[in-house]
Every structure is written in structure tokens, then in C-alpha cells.
Length: 422
Image (cartoon, rainbow, N blue to C red; front, side, top):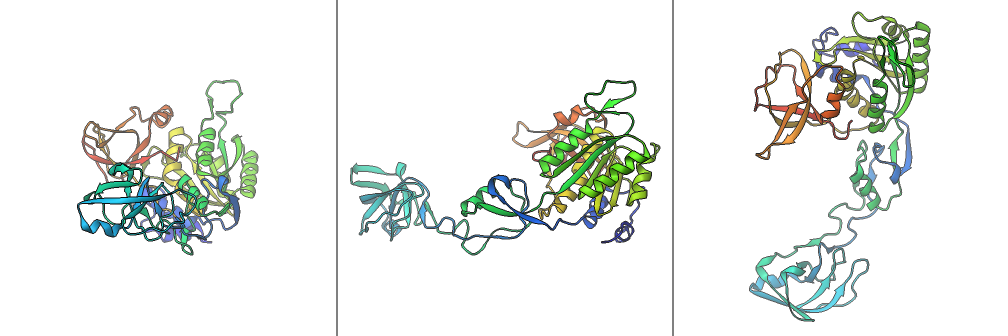
């Protein structure tokens, strides 16, 4: 396990007082390691979990050639003659069991979606393309389809003996359905990541406490809890910890004993009471950063015992932005996920935005479809780091990158969408 100093030495131009957003993610990618313990869980409980080892398909899916729609199955060689094709219909193939008859020249079988293709037949003409001459005969133009149309091939989705899902895949609804399609009742996953969280500060009120002058109710605790829950972590909620050394030390020690990662909010800014920062430094290997970003900027990162520490700023929006930009990708790696970083959407800016090169800015934005059918994005207005309502209105963050300057209306910008994250 490398120390923070050893990791920093690997990063060109590392400066903890002026760290770029890209450098933060590079550092964190080197700091965190995936959990190793695994377990088998029922498919119904696997949503959001990460596959621990390759899942090899025990069967082919589909298990046989079958019809992709309702229609009439026939030998596609008949299409070569052109003109109008006439089929003598000699039976009906239903889904769930094989049709047992034998098909001769010029004959076909009425077939339902999902039914096994009868032997010798390789093409299905949709029912709506045909004309019934009587109960036993249909015709259709040969130029309406090609040989092999509307037939699903055995194993065209998944092949027996080959990997169906790779280790590191995060199981979404489609992946859970895929596992079930293999007939597997359970799936091997990494254990849930345990993350402890607490807010710090004498000015923070918990719900149920009476208002008092200069105090604010703790929103960060509930926001972070939601972010971690949606990510699929096991959340250890430690409430609010006052600015008292003994209380902070006890909280950090308890969190480190219980969790793989610790997240705090507040107490890492320049000029704040230094109890939190001092305790982090006392108990672990911790770096204090000033990140070239807005909103946000102060952040603490390191280890306390074997737990990874993320000390976030106190402002509500800054907490969410730093979580989405830095903490979430790091936690996904700790969960064992092998997926690349969440891709940006590219959208047209509906307004001009002032921006100086030299820092990354995250503007709260609303993405919609313009009248021309192209994606466009506008800000939510007031971008103050304490305006939590703007995060409720937004459906993504407009990311103005480190070297980027002013944005004119109509310029293309990157957007980090919220769907599936918050």
C-alpha cells in the first residue's frame, strides 16, 4: 500500500494548493483498491451490485432457432424464383414446444413468435405481408423479404460456454434479466462497500432540534445518505459530530473500525476551526487539497487505518459536486466496478457563461431537447454553493473544463447527467 507522498510523487506537477480536477481523479484512482470479499446473492437482490467473477453461460440463448414474429415459416430457397410465392399451410407451430411434422416442397407452417423453427425452414414471412387464399393456402410477394428474415438463431444472444457477463460489471436491470435468462438463480458479487458518514460543526442542527441563532439544519447528511444508497453502498450513519477533539477522535476511530471508506462534510476549509483537520492528521495519512474548481475547493483525502477518507467541504452544493466528480468514481472502483468514468453528454448552451481558464467549473444545468431536435442546456440561475434548490431543479452539471474560457450562447458544452446518480 503506497503512502500519499509516494502517490503524489508519481503525479507530474502535483501541487496540493492548486490541484486540477483531472489530477484529483488520477490521485484517487491510485489511492483506492477494490474490496476482495465476495458472496452469492439471489438475482432479485443483485441490482446495483458488481459481478465478482465472469459469469459463463451454461446454455445458449436462444436455445434453438425460433421465429421473431407471428407469420408463416418456409424454406427461403423459394424466394429465388421471384414473383408471388404460394405456400400450402400444413400446421401451426406454437411457442413452448416443437412442431413435430415434416414439411415438403411448397409447404409452410403457421408460426407464433418464439416458436421453434421447424426442421428445413429458415425464413418467416410476417402474417400482415400475406394474403389468405383459403384456410390452407397463403400468398405473398417474394420481394418483401430475404432468405433468413425474421428468424432468431440459436445462441445469437449468448453462446453456451462463453462469458455472458465479465467480472466488474455493475448489474443494472438488463443485466439482472440476462442472468435470469441463463437459468441462474444466484449471482457472484463483491460484498457491499461499507461507508461511514458524519457531518461536523457546532453550527449544525439535527432534525428534531429547536432552531437557534446562527445554526442550520444538516442537509448534507441526508444528501450523502441518498447518494451512497443509490450507489449501492452499506451506509453507516454517524450523525453530527461537534467540534470537540475527544468527540471527533472517537467518531473517526469508530468509523475506521467499521467502514471501508469514511466521508465527512465541513471542517476542511482554510480559516475554519482546525479540530477536524488536526484529528484527521493525527489519526491517519491525510492530504489537504485546494482544488482548482467551483463550487468546492477544499477537500481532504487519505487513510485512517485501512479506511479511505474523503473530507468534503460543508456547503451543500459543494458536497454534491465533489461527491459526483471525485468520490463516486473512487467508490465505484472500491466496489470492484470496471466500467469507465460516466460519459458526458454534449449539448448546446442556451446562454453565455463567463469562465476563466485555470479551474473547472460545475454549473447546475437543465438539459432539454431544442426545437431543432438537438440537446440544449441552460443553467438553473443562481449558482451559489449554498443554493440546494438549484440541485433539485437541475438534471445535470455543466462541466466547464480547466483550460476552457468563456462560453457563448450556441457553443457546445459537456454535461454530467444526474440520472442514476442522484
